[in-house]
Image (cartoon, rainbow, N blue to C red):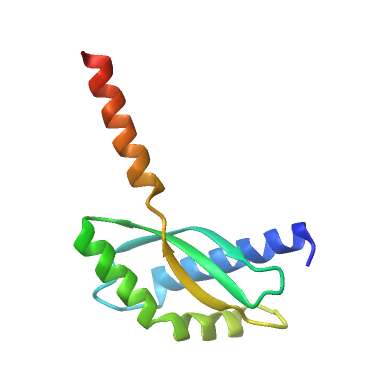
Length: 114
């Protein structure tokens, strides 16, 4: 699959899953989850969905568990809302880059204050 088309598929999957998380998924374990990126394989068989969770470690664990349990529902949603020949298997991954960036900012402010 071509690069530009794969980028469009990644963006479509990201938008659909984001919409699904905001409007349709009603799991109480699910916290404030943001889809940060999607990386689909070239053959469209698998899609790594990177998510960020606002909260502590307990909230991260609960949200990722809820997403894993909803994986089939999410895949079925994509099958119904996207016109793809193949609907990819979904693999949710934690994206802790925002948390890491905030920690670096905090350290830089400390160093700057000294």
